[in-house]
Image 1: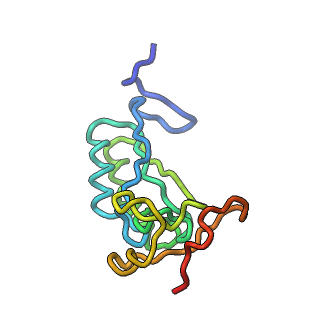
Image 2: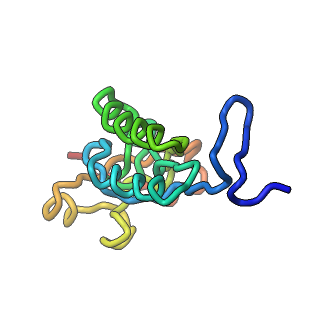
Length: 151
């Protein structure tokens, strides 16, 4: 009978056990690039024995970010920092995963410790974090209309 520590095979991927780490938003990226924070944050779960470790929500476009601190995959410069983390996870015997995202109507927000409210002039002045237009599937029920300010 399988246990939490039994290996698990899904198609051609074998996991050393059944422990998976869900994606956790860290809001620590700069220009969408992962950094040492992400390596240490995700690496500690691998060192603790997890078999599957997901990177946080990773925006597929610049305008698809929820906050200025979100990871991204819209520019080639973002590949190598994520590869470094993925390679570390793999070398330590775990499987790297990634949660791709697009924030839609929730885009252009402050980080949680700044209030998770729309970015505004204060953010532009204090943190050099300008707002961007939120893009959603339709204008229907678009609560964020009017929060983008032109540069």
